[in-house]
Amino acid sequence: AQSVTQPDIHITVSEGASLELRCNYSYGATPYLFWYVQSPGQGLQLLLKYFSGDTLVQGIKGFEAEFKRSQSSFNLRKPSVHWSDAAEYFCAVGGGTDSWGKLQFGAGTQVVVTP
Amino acid sequence: KAGVTQTPRYLIKTRGQQVTLSCSPISGHRSVSWYQQTPGQGLQFLFEYFSETQRNKGNFPGRFSGRQFSNSRSEMNVSTLELGDSALYLCASSFEAGASYNEQFFGPGTRLTVL
Image 1 (cartoon, rainbow over the protein chains, first blue to last red):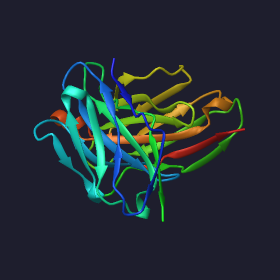
Image 2: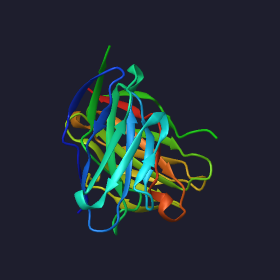
Image 3: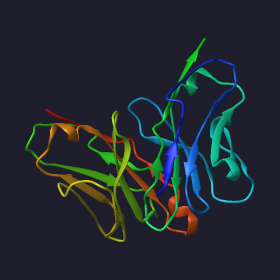
Image 4: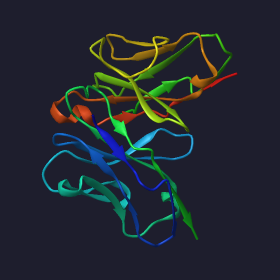
């Protein structure tokens, strides 16, 4: 069965500093990987996705993520954080035999940005 | 192109009542998925519909049901509400085209409170 682990429940980062959010997945085949962001009381916004090809993917809002098959990881990075990046971030995996319309989400990482 | 819309945005019900939530997908999207989000359990997949057929179902009791109409709009129904059904219910749509069906676009959610 698919699973996604986000080891960090909460991260505090200073504005202008770099940010890295960790995501590890368990999946038998080539996964489809996603990062979503959720602001308080809102739905999920897709930041970026990986289906195949180049393992470094660029997303919106200056985010990027790197797929590392050997480490089963798909970590999200941003070189310089803005106060508006404070939100909850979710890693998700899709694909597989029972995956019709189903994404498996991690527990999320809450990001707090300090001045 | 308009995004995924969900109505109503907020609902307050009492135990034992039933509720119906509505979701209109992005134009051209035929797959609609539903998720329940709670602080304790995170994001959990409820079910997915495509062309008016339920293709996948998560691990929820039969009190949770859904349907999809010919215009791809979807509804979910929860009968005999329990306090634990209080949650943010998220709808997502995707375009059925190869791997892209995994890429889901989320609505703002319906916040259900059961008293």
